[in-house]
Length: 148
Image (cartoon, helix red, strand yellow):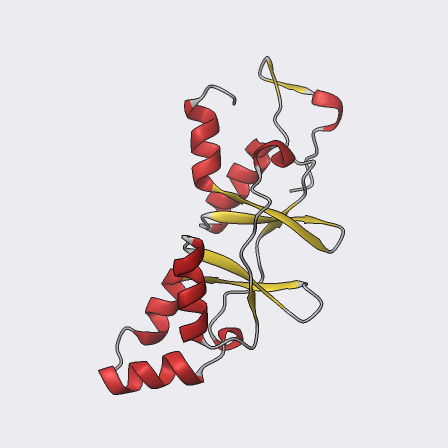
């Protein structure tokens, strides 16, 4: 991050594309005190594989992904797995820190951040407010549509 793209600077002969142009604004979130089982239902309902974990003020504290859930429950017996799902809060298994980017950043910066940190999504933060999410699928779609 930090490499901003003000006023449509050109990159390799093409205008750069801001994160704000590709980000999704309908962001599913889960509260830090939610149980893993509640979070699983939330992920399924939202048809996503990861969500930001927020506190009461809506500030992103971490991210919960399907990988985090699998890791927390994989080697448990059925009974133990059910206990973990129901009695463990999202805060206890979330990944931190949440990987974020600014809406003004170039999408190429976002792609480099995703690759560097081996993540599939970046949360878009303006000030301290969560304003969107940029998943890898949106970048791939933009490349396929020759927007990047």
